[in-house]
Length: 463
Image 1: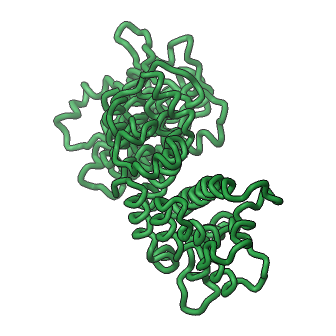
Image 2 (image 1 turned 180 degrees about the vertical axis):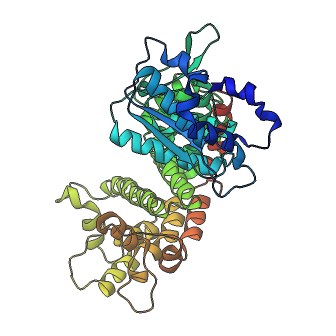
């Protein structure tokens, strides 16, 4: 707003603040309106391409900040509204007051969040045009950042009046890039790799030449134990740090510490899958995602049992010729001779009322794997797992801790919630169990995803 009266009255030499002076102008508006004209906004409103149906004018009214409220634009906004109506016949004009410190970025972020929420609810299909020629630097920043967060790209734009009377539309690409990068980094820290990729404009289901996108897709699939997709991206040779051991080991476990005996016994793909399941469970435990950690650990021990029994069964087939029940070879082998895995047989008789035992189901299977001597390399892992999978720690026995299997079943089938307090109460041994399994499986006790996340963050910041 510009006024000839400002020169005539030499306002800068009077004791009136801007707030008081504009109030005086507003009080005398009918007398002085011919001497007041719009400045900057008239250039926007004169543009034939801009025909607003409604105008929001944001003004400051720092009622509780007497030291600085002399510069408030409360009355100036009212004058501007009257001038717009007089000159452009736009009736729908709303004054919105900023009542707190106009340099307080936290308050301003909340203010614009509430404003945009209301606008989107009331005018969900509208196009919003910003003209930020006035206001503090903090107001400009807060309004644009929150707009980036909340408003769809195709629903808003910023216009700047030029001296020649034209209007220039400005895109906020740099704002958007900074915000998106920080959002992506925050998501990566929570292992939300696909969400981070989407924020940056990528898609896990699309082939791309973008190395950062490929890295995020690679680690997304790795974190979900989707080994074929992980391998496909690695073999395309278009991800940064491809030969770094922490990345290479996702397709070749021999590139980091590993157990040669278990690797040779299970062969590469099975050993790799079980390694990845254990590493993911460990990472999720360290980052406080206890529910998913327990479920991923269950994937590890269930698959370990299944694959171990498959290997043992093939060995037993060499002993039993033409088995009568080929789908129950292990049970048949044990039942035919009380010497075969005798400790496991005794355990079954003591702990089960039913006289028909299934030695291929948990918990008897883990006892069998720990006792059998066909493959001694299976025994250490099985012996570590026994106390936490069998009936020893059943919650149905007095003063006994919950077995990890019981807790896992409640998570999977009953929607049980687990936080740190519940974990310590029900599975106080869980961290040690993970560490012991990592060691016996030949893996270091370290969070590889923390290393991967740092690698991704560096790539995002340089993107």
